[in-house]
Image (spheres, rainbow, N blue to C red):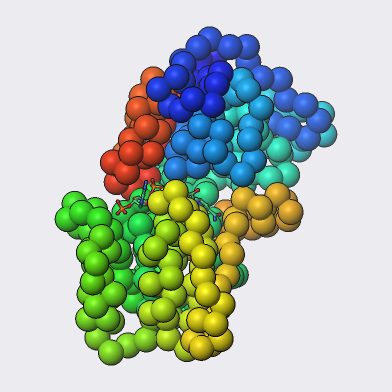
Length: 326
Ligand SMILES: NC(=O)c1ccc[n+]([C@@H]2O[C@H](COP(=O)([O-])OP(=O)(O)OC[C@H]3O[C@@H](n4cnc5c(N)ncnc54)[C@H](OP(=O)(O)O)[C@@H]3O)[C@@H](O)[C@H]2O)c1
């Protein structure tokens, strides 16, 4: 089968499209024919060896995929054979075939687009877990999404909007702010300006800021935390700026606000059954028309390295998905 291979932690330009042996499912595993694999900033970190967990070399990147089950390992439920599933991938989704743990995948209804399923798995999983389980977001509250036009940010806009919140999107260019507005943000601000907190205050129109969704960090984090209303929650999602913010803890006391870490991947590793639960919740919300998961761009396997490079260079808008069979 064809697969993208990473032989050194030197970044996306050194990734290679190669012929490799088909993986063989072990106990409890399933083999899928990958229909779609979502890409995120984290894949760039993996191929640079900069993520908190280093994948041993050589490896195939790509951590979230959807596809048909084509083989079962010992003990994997027989009724999964032929079903379309989505889940975290073991050993890489940027390939024509990939392994998953049978107990960690969710069955995707046949009428649910596999491209949307792969696009949604991590980012919508993070947003649903983040807003519902960690942030206790309520209808009528106001959310600020930093890095709003990225894959994580766009999913956050859609989920917060679907939960009845007012969403303010922060992004660096007109194109990115327009994409965030099109996705459902009520207002968009340019957070690259020195006085962006003034723009945020104006956008709030006298309302309090209840939740910050922060996949960017850096100098933006403290400024956003300072803008929270009493009882506010700042959800720490990621560090796309490359800088881990430090927060003076007196702010949490003075603001009566909370800093909440949201690690979807870590949560699912610790609570395996919760992955499929949130994926089912995602399907429910989509079926009810409350959210609209989708890929913002679709690419071939050979294009994957340049897509990862574009994400690292801050040039992508939204969520890219690779279709390995195309
Ligand atoms: N906690 C979790 O469970 C979880 C789950 C998934 C992802 N994440 C993390 O969330 C973060 C975002 O992931 P993503 O897939 O949404 O990435 P993405 O699509 O590349 O979006 C990241 C956004 O961050 C902004 N940004 C600011 N400074 C940047 C810089 N120096 N380089 C690149 N982007 C920069 C960009 O928007 P502007 O140009 O508008 O500033 C960009 O749109 C990553 O750190 C990822 O590891 C966490």
